[in-house]
Image (cartoon, rainbow, N blue to C red; front, side, top):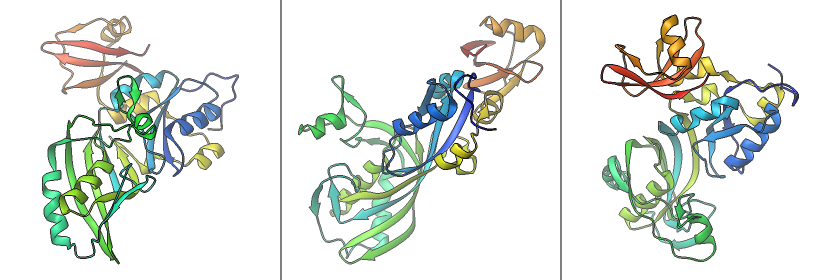
Length: 298
């Protein structure tokens, strides 16, 4: 479909953007507002300016889905440079230390990755959006403060080498990462370098998947400017959640946000429920022999 004008009501749904390097997630939201013709645009899962790849935008009523989508798993490809540590744990930060790493072998890197897989306690990068006493951690660091963030539990399902190159006194390691939301790939780079005693930081990060949404669903900013591509609320929720098709009587109850008794949604967690015509109505959750509303969209 072509871009809506500001006089039309924006079609609610999800837009999957292939975020360009150098743009903040807020920059993408700003462009999305212009292209969609509405200010009601939000994003799920912040990407650093340096990073590229899958960024989900919610348009209109679909912004209410974003809190649910942020709780999902993600995949990345990245390059970790061993032999240099930075303030931000990526290539954009001030260099803290250079340590010759040309001697590091693939076998040593593989061994150092083992403790970084599975369910781990990870200390987020100090230059992050986490709030400390009401102020973003990155703002405190940039103001010259020393910030010590508490560790948090994350799960790294995969951290594996796809290529390794010795470049003089540094080693560049291309990796694939599959992890839960809240995992900092920059922190994985930092911790891998620390474990090897040479320091490490990210030089490239590309997100390839957020839940079921991949780069195959994504369009660049330029492509979206040419042709606005919205995954409708009906289709997006079918893709993102387990689904349940209601009877007419059940649909009527759902539209009033009522608890459904004697019903089995057939899946744990949040389930998208649809009326007999296939229209998405709400997100529900099974609790024993009843299903209770999480969010009603009509």
